[in-house]
Length: 171
Image (cartoon, rainbow, N blue to C red; front, side, top):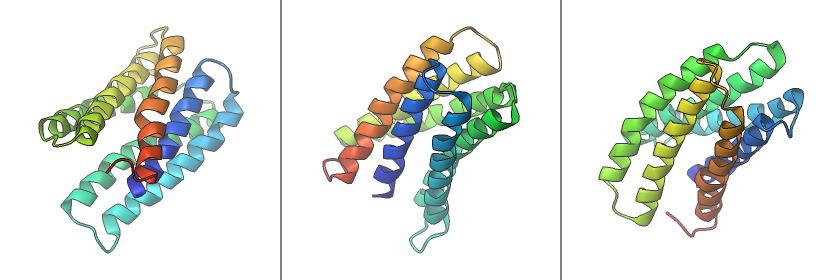
């Protein structure tokens, strides 16, 4: 259930961050959802890592979840401190490289439609974080493409699987 909770709000923040990149939401306002989801996923990760059922798998899940938490909190901080995002761009490259083998591991060990979908989500997130690296650190003019990709991934890799998990359709 915690995965469904986290993914539902990851979907929301990605969708809205995409709209922000498309200049449909202002800089000051986008920070609110990024702080909320950053804190929420941080709490989910802490419970997974240190809760009563913590084991190697939940600690790994927590470590990966914290990549999301830190990204969203950094986006929010940059909206308030006026940073240009280059540091976040380089962090995005680190995350993109980190989650690519997770996508491959998930796909190679897939035993259900959900496993395949989740593996493809990891691959999609790797691409998205790489796009943020190109946009923020390398300064490629891909804000519009990144905005559309972010919003689309918000729906397909966050909101939809989160909604289905919370409603018992997946998992």
